[in-house]
Length: 89
Image (tube, rainbow, N blue to C red):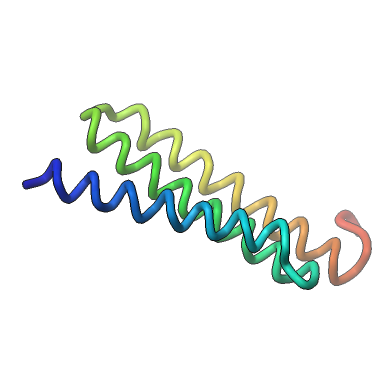
């Protein structure tokens, strides 16, 4: 039962990543592209956690945590650049 749920969830997360990639490339303006990139970070974290569950390995959870921290910092940096034109004041 868990294997079937993992297959379905993996398929849906990959589909969500593809839709985010479309929004990232076609997005009408820069804030939409930043939001699509941030959502891709969240979806990639979900994909890595699901892969860790599927392979029964703890290493994937640590890498998901690392990607979450990098995603947060990069989103803040890009938003500061869009709003102010400079990252470091």
